[in-house]
Amino acid sequence: MPTPEPHAASTAAQSPAALRDLLSSLLVGLRLDGVEYGRCVQHGPWAVTFPAQRSARFHFVASGGCWLRTRTSDWLQLRAGDAVLIPRGSFHVLASAPDVPAIDIDTLSRVPVSENVYVVAGNAPPEGQAASAPEVLFCGALRFNLDPLHPLMMMMPEVMRAGELARRDPTVPALLEAMEREVALDRVGACGIVARLADAVAASIIRAWVECGCSNDSSGWIAAVRCPKIGRVIAAIHADPERDWTVPALAELMGASRSSFAEAFTRTVGDSPAKYVAKVKMFQARRWIAQEGMRIAVAAERLGYDSEASFSRAFKRIIGHPPSAARGDPGQACEAAPAGRLTMA
Image (cartoon, rainbow, N blue to C red; front, side, top):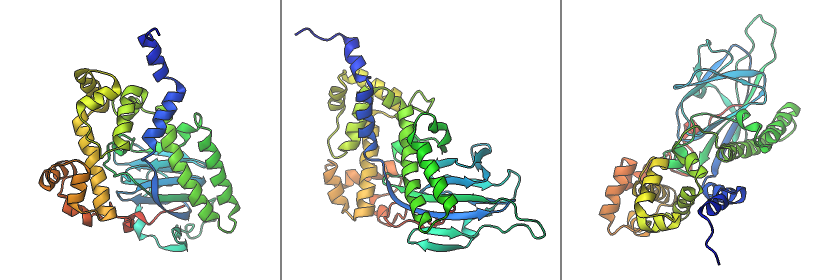
């Protein structure tokens, strides 16, 4: 049988079916662990600050409109039907207009509607003025099963806007329209249904961002996805972090020499293969210790370390504190921190 031409193999690797399989593998470990939502009706002028937190933030503008600003970005106008995801829970402000003084979200009172859905007390119309059409917001705190400092999470942009993806992914606008209808009809149980829809919207935003390659970076996760050979390596590392992933083994998986693999991986991902593997292992270890109560010695053995001491040194170097401190890390616990529980919409 004749040997296939090199370009033929490359074309097969770049086929839509192959890329879909690769993306599915990469996204398998990225999902939402917990969700808490709230609904708020605001009458202008108003402005609310959301402090930085480990949980992601989600905002959906059901009616009216508002503005959003982070510490590193200018004001972004959001209109009715818009949704944004702030994957790393960065500090940000929502306001009826950019020049309105803001108050902290935690100062607003809330009334529980169900186990994880709240009505947040917005502001009343200014005294002596007729009530204008209100801004209705539905916002949420979402907890990913991945660490906020996980390499995949860190590669996401600070703000991910659904409107920018709607033209490319028909799922996103369909879900947003369903949310809009539920809020407008205000039927019994609407908040709970909108919360579930918001869960799906957040996941769809991430999927659309990955599939559409909505990043201009020449390095990082999206660049790796565009290169199926490197993406295949990343998917394998995340699928089996307990394996002893040596550079020769990873190079063989990519079908390249050790030197060319290491150079291509480092250039595309931004970390050397060994450093990336170590990060994935340590973030997996932190979840085991914090969420499952796994003993440090067991985590060290499962991840292939010769001793608990060598594992602890690697953990502290990458995470910033010894593994024993992970047991008291509220950001890794199954229960959401209080700041992550107050949301709007």
